Amino acid sequence: MERNDVKLTTLTTKGGCGCKIGPADLSQVLRTLPAAPFDENLLVGLDTSDDAGVYKLTDDLAIVQTLDFFTPIVDDPYDFGQIAATNAISDVYAMGGKPITALNIVAFPISKLDKEILTEILRGAADKLKEAGVTLVGGHSIDDQEPKFGLSVTGIVHPDHVKSNAGAQPGDCLILTKPIGVGIYTTSLKHGVLSEEEIRQVTSVMTTLNKTAAEVMASYEVHATTDVTGFGLLGHATEMAKASDVGIQIFSEKVPVLPRTRELAEAGRIPGGTKNNFAYVKEDISFPETMDEMDRYILCDAVTSGGLLISASSEKAVDLLNDLQKNGVDAHMIGEITAENRKKIQVI
Image (cartoon, rainbow, N blue to C red; front, top):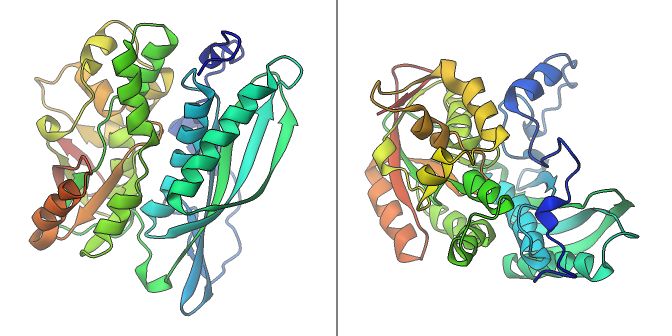
């Protein structure tokens, strides 16, 4: 619901978008930092550009730690809270973990906006945490000129059952559990060119937990996972290819895309994050000569709260796909892992 006719998506400062720092800029910053001291209990750290950190506490228990926050991408504060929570929790699912606790991260212009807006944001997040079985244990807030919200989430996982983006094996099949095009849709929402049904559709995608997908895949031979978020499908697939030292083929016609995404892209609703993603990965990707720039951008679209990208054994991938679909997950087989073209992506 909108409070006092405030449109949350218009409240970012000039030049700000609330999106992630682009992969090229982030890589340049991180490469200048000294390596962290070696710790044998750090099972997953910064070196593979994974979704979350994993630290072993005992032989039977490790913790998964992640955080995420951003400016509003929808106008309904309750929906914004739900999206932020769903997005933050997703990293734990991508690592094969079970989320257990969360901390809120709040920046809000408390003297300028109705306090009920913040109440609704927090209520949306709380309801999504309850759905995920996650306990809110606290948080931190600051008075800021533009609203931002997110969460730090902690999960648990057995050290032998950690999933990362570094385990994909040649012959695996790739499964994606949500459609892409979210970044183009949310940019279009800011410009007022989405219908109410389209707003409901993209909001539903962003507020759908990856809980069911994670629970279903736990029973199958899954070698690697990541969730598709700010760096886009091809950005996160490239990270998987590099971390696993494999090649990846993406079947472009099999990739699920929100309706009217190309039309919106052609109308100029491509977010800056999507263009940054394309510029960063294009040297690692071969596209068909017949694929135009718009379709290339769509495959790089910056997603919020996207699906899981799962690299699963080919012997069980069809069964996994069918099981995901049977349990209501909008899953599609979109590619495969190869021994050739290592650390690169081939779009077919």
